[in-house]
Length: 418
Image 1 (cartoon, helix red, strand yellow):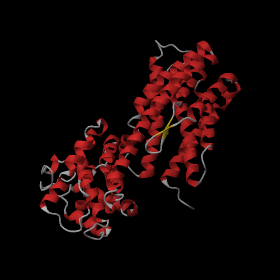
Image 2 (image 1 turned 135 degrees about the vertical axis):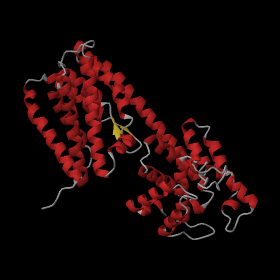
Image 3 (image 1 turned 90 degrees about the vertical axis):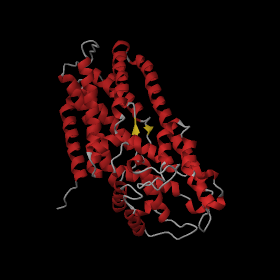
Image 4 (image 1 turned 180 degrees about the vertical axis):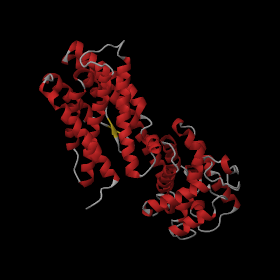
């Protein structure tokens, strides 16, 4: 008999809980107002088919507001079935394979449980579907929102922690830290939806769609702007590397490895984003260095090396004028500093060097060693890792070098070498 792995057992448990909630709530379908049920089902589907894509290929919707409104009007048992229908139809749009099947089961079950669990809390605390009292119902509204958040993010965080074998705190910090403000911002729309429907009926929902679409559009603009930022940075990195055929793809590889090291060190999501930007642009200061110096196949003269040594400061000066790259600029400025103070441009020592710069330094040297250069052939991955370990504590931060070794042990080496 095959032994199920932890993710499969977890998804199975979530599925069983969801099935139980469907069974205990199905009788509600006999007494629910059909018109209202259909309206909220269509409204939730509308919200779910217009997701906003995040940078990590995940997506968010404004469906939370619709489900809150439905719980306040129809009650949680009817809303469980609205969530189930919405989730099923949303998942059917995607291709099914062996991995995706379990993912779809989890997603559908998550919808059911977060609606059922949060709605149950709301009604147990005195909430009455179809009746809203803003003055006396604050505790119920607040508990509904917090319960929905905790169930949704909690189950996702635990699932990802099991799947990737990483601490729950790390998964939450790097993936869902932004979620609570988002829920708090959308919750008033759900309450507003319920009030409008109770007082104005279905026609009043047309008014609700305006703030709902504005909320989605605003968030989409924000994510599109971040995407444009990243694409602009990648274009700049490509333009710099076009001067030197030996470093083509260098910045992308350094960025991937730097992010993997930071994740191994359990850095938060904001730090990792800034590190990603900095790693992509760490050599932008070389844009003013003549190609004959960059591509010189023999030892550089003192004057030539002085020009090379200026590139971290030049690069930092370029990017620090851009607001969202302020932290990234310090990583760029100090990524050639060394633990013993023998680096450049300022000769910083030990903890004086920002951790982001230390991570880029390790990723930068590893990629340089494992790729062909005008003056030597590429090193083997094992030899490059050994060289970095040899320089640990002198040139590189020991914790960063250890994190690099763990990344290379866990991941496919091909992702970080040519």
